[in-house]
Image (cartoon, rainbow, N blue to C red; front, top):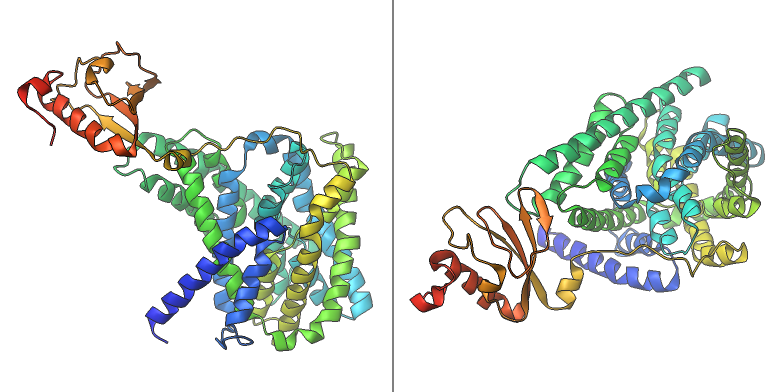
Length: 501
């Protein structure tokens, strides 16, 4: 097929996936399952497009996960999660270790897997999926502390699980002590890089005036990947670095922060769609039947044993440390809300792409993980609202965040104009009422010497002022002509026949 056909096919899949998001949102079904379905549809079992390149899938998957984590950091409200960080850190480190062991031991005993493969499966399944958690839980009216724990955990636990899977997929696995030291080192380097790049990026964006506002969101995402790549080059955790750097930037006062968040959200959705479709194409439905029973058994162990055990033991640890206290209802909901999504499937491509793991074994693990993610996401995702209500944790009457964006201007068919007064402009000295703008236009804000204020009718305009004017779309042209006319000839421009054309 030519490139134009590929472009048409890709665009069609993206449009269909966007439409499917609305269906998923209404039904409570996680959209990732629909995206995986698209991948299966265009893959070998559907249209017959062949894709069996685990190395490429691994690299593309890790980049897509980095984008999703960057969006998660940028859109996470620090005020909501800061109280939950200690608990989330324990869940993302100690809880991950407990989950790996709690899956590996029963799988080894019940399914006869060798210890290395059992531990590898446990590590692959240990991480909750940030995309699944963000898309499902942000719609639930949960108490802020509980929602903060889930969000922060899903953003933080990718890093240690990726390190664990990499270590277990290596040709020679280090000793337990060496592995723990390596994990601590990589997480420390990732945290340092992320907490360094984030503030430096905010500082730079505040002081560098870019000529086009659309460049700011691109710069923010690029800075996030500076943290990711920089940490990887220093042998640290790129996932932890990109999440922390994005978290810092998303919660700092920087130019066009709302636009940066919106841009990151759109790119993350595109990454999710591409990632899940690619993973669906990578799967071989003809090989799935042999993995169904082992997958269901491993999934039951994960959902009913490993996740609850990791939550209970982590809760005891944070209680003993006196940093938090989780009651049994919160622990039960956290146990059920450990959603798995693209992350385990992407992690399953790591041993498949590694030469140290037998291809048949690695492919079987991939198929198992695929079955687990599909079945248990279908089981857990739609039932979360019911479980929250059953446990008395749903808070529908609690005030939710107000989302402020420029979209209402479009809904009102209005425009926002930014006008800078140059040194030679005769707008200097003109009072606001003397502009005599149409009734459907208003100067709403003036930026002067780095300070913003709402002008009165008698406020005089000065050189270097920035005026923000809100106007209806119908009045935009007359407003622009009037401003140009006064800038050229002053407030009596009309007497001189200046029409601002």
